[in-house]
Image 1 (tube, rainbow, N blue to C red):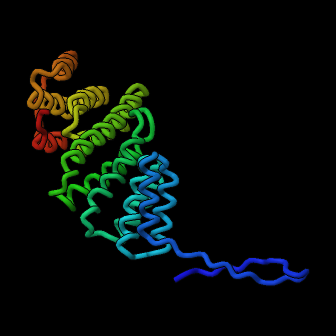
Image 2: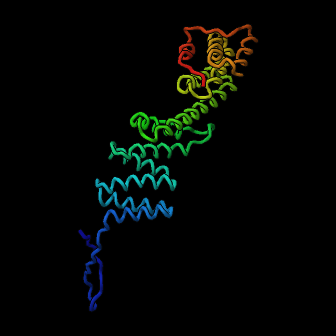
Length: 265
């Protein structure tokens, strides 16, 4: 159907209504206009055209396709916040669509591309990790799973690096309980990352400074068992020797329990 809009005109000195007929633009035309703007890298213009399809023809197959391309256009611009918002809407409306794994992937990448260095807030890394993990869990056979798993590893490593950075800070301030909590988190949450070795060494260091020798010895023993050739283990062994101690695993220690699930990487 055509939409009607009213305008004013002056005829013979009097004011009269003039009816103007503006034809509706078919959804495929709007969609193709969006594709054309994508081709010229006019991502904002493309997003607007796809948005018109979604607005004017809701719940249609054209609306679904347009919403998918809205996610893509905003991601490419890049306008990551709008990309995530559109992705969330797509997932809510079309959870079983064949394109839903791709939408998850774009949402995860929108956060992943904003992950800063370990000295800064890691909220983006946490959100990327959450979305990629959901993608892997819900769509294990998706073509995006392999890359999602790789990026999960990168995000986890980044989060572990942040914990290590904060833990080292507490160590320098001699706030040993706070430091230990951070290093525990690395072992408990991110034990497959490259930071595990240092976390065990730092636990040896912190517990020894507190005079809790059994935990210090256990951390060093777990470090030596999993990473016998590591420089961190050599340093932990030397540190214990300064106090007349040797690495020894006390099986009632929390570190011992976590150590049973560690694997050298």
